[in-house]
Amino acid sequence: MDFICLLPGMKLEKKHNLALDKFINLSLYSRKFGYYMKKNSFGKKGDFITAPNISRLFSEMLAVWIISFWESLGSPKKFNLIELGAGNGEMMKIFIESFKNFPLFLRSCNFIIHEKSPSLIKIQKKKLLKNKIVWVSKINKLNSDPSIFIANEFFDALAIKQFRKKDNLWFEKFINFASQTQVKFFEKKANVKKIEKKINLKISQNQNFIEYSELGLNYLKNISKIIKKNNGGLLLIDYGYTNGKMQNTLQAISNHKFANILKDIGNSDITHNINFDLFKKFTKQIGGLRSNITTQRDFLIKMGIKERAEIISKNQNFLKKADIYYRLKRLIDERQMGGLFKVMLIKNHKNKFRLGF
Image 1 (cartoon, helix red, strand yellow):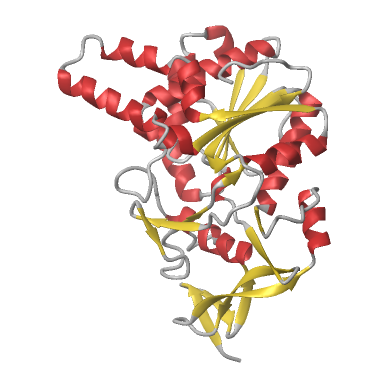
Image 2 (image 1 turned 30 degrees about the vertical axis):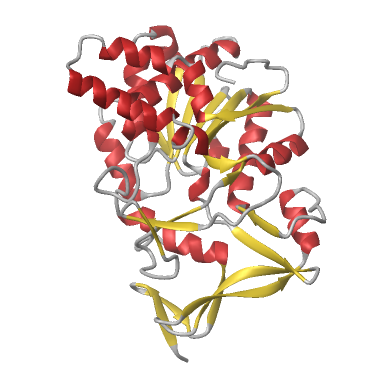
């Protein structure tokens, strides 16, 4: 039997076919050779920069929001703050620094990080050494305290499925490995009823393309159940769109540039834009929950990021001031992260908290 090598040490039978989501999962999360499992991808030396690494103002605004949301829950004496996919740990570090000004809140908080990557856990532990943080591999084993989940650029990194309608029939995207150099996309006939069952929604007739993360929707379902049962909320920040028509947003990033998904497997970040309209409809089907969506620009401005920038730049020299406002612009400019990124809040339907929205 002939084999080809997809990743170093990982053999697949020749002419092997993988569904797109299985391929992405192997490329990103294969234990030894997956992209997220072996390197620190964040910052200038990595492949992309996330908001917490652009300016600490971003994390400070979220810290203020978390305290306010905790108060809307009745200021519970014990609650869980869970960051999903904490990257290099920068955001959690700034959270804790900010919370030190609020001792009652700090005493009440169980700090938890949900992270799959062993290499990132090492980086996080080094940065957060002096703090009492628990790392968990599964979120469904949390205690019964109210839980506030923070997901900044978490859902976009979860593997997706793609389907295309052709002549009124649906086809799923697969990857074929004819050889190590011949890797290509192809399609297999799919059952639309099975897709509808997975996403818990009816596919409209004018929809010609379907893209969703099965794992992402499972996270959403499990988190929603925890919120309904124990109280709390999910604050989700990610790049995406809100119009109902699904789009093909699959892309690979390497060294801050777009890359070929089928080349240099395991060395590029594979990502997609979040369909916030799908998330909203999916959450509504679960019942008992309320959701709000806005742009990152509007959220941060309502949280007072401009005023905070003014305060910290007051006694700085020109170069330092220019740097603070350059970074602020990246976060709130409509043509940059301010427009592309959306912020979504999912909470119990009885909670009318709307700060930032």
